[in-house]
Length: 187
Image (tube, rainbow, N blue to C red; front, side, top):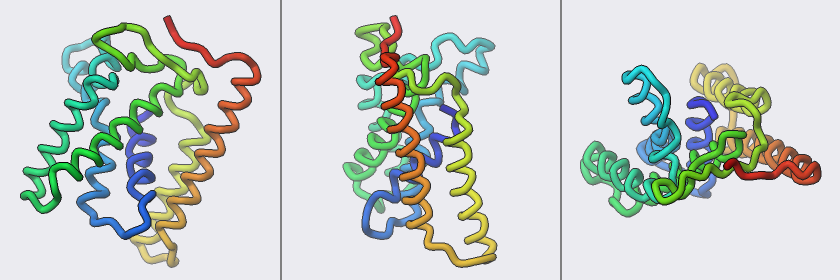
């Protein structure tokens, strides 16, 4: 998935709670949902993309990545939010990222470095999906209209609406491909 999708999935994840969240927690959700792709950015500077989606997209390394991410936020936020809470937020964001990336045909090496096998639900063939992009674009426009005060929007309802829209797309594609016998793992 693209970074746009990951950032909005972090925002959607932050809005699953019933109580109003502080902006710092929402930012932690969004950043942690994007953080596993840091390896791709680092690999760009090396001139090759071999190795992207290896260590940073494994369940084993996600434990350490969430700890590093939580500690960074703990320091940045000057200990205003408990470290354990930040760790849970970062872990949720990172796991959401890995789940979304396992939906596309390339999948993720969930048990890397113990296994090089990539696991995929094989639901999406491309990294950028027009339906997800449309849903997230609607959400972005809702934020823009809210910020510009063009009209009043209940942001929590907008996020829930777009999240349900995207969930319906996931489930319908999964069921369609499951019936077609296309759920596989990559070797």
